Each structure stands twice: as structure tokens, then as C-alpha cells.
Length: 117
Image 1 (cartoon, rainbow, N blue to C red):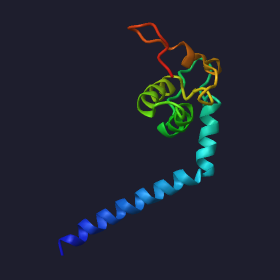
Image 2 (cartoon, helix red, strand yellow):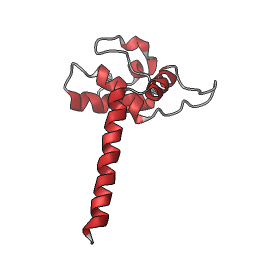
Image 3 (tube, rainbow, N blue to C red):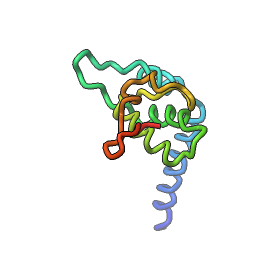
Image 4 (cartoon, rainbow, N blue to C red):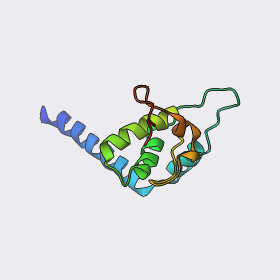
């Protein structure tokens, strides 16, 4: 009798995780619309601070950017830069950083080298 609530909770978590994986794999229309929204700079008005993009937007862009590099370090730095630059990440692994001036201009405070991969 005590196993029933635990079993139901585990089943619910499993179903939720499966649904989430399917939604990500399917590349739903909503996700595409959100990606377009954030790649166009969001709806920040002139003079207003840019909104912070959701992690799903930065995750997709950084996966593409870091596809030819060691993922751990590249992904961590890219996600940080993407968040600070309102979702702006160069479009591919060899794309010029000039696509995103914020991404290009971010420097490491210790060494002065570029911070974003």
C-alpha cells in the first residue's frame, strides 16, 4: 500500500521527462518561434536593458557554436556569454565573432584575452 504513492510519483516523473525529451527532439514550432524572437534581440525597447534569454535558446546556439570543440569548457563559457549578451551568439563553429559585438568584446579580467569561445 505504501509503494503505490511512490510508484505514481516515479511514473509521473518518467512521463514528464519523456515528454520533455520528445518536445526537444521534435523541434516544436513554439521553440522555433522563441529562437527567432531571441535571435532578433527580443522586444527590449531603446534605452531599456535587454531581457535575459531562456536557457533553451542559449543551449541550442551554444551547442552549434561548440560543435567542433571540447564541449565542457566551451559550453560553459558560451552559455555565460550568451546570457550576458541577450542571446547573441555567432551562428556556427567557425562564424566570425563580428556577428555579435557584445560576444566579441567580452574580455577576461585577468588576462585580457577574449572570454567567449
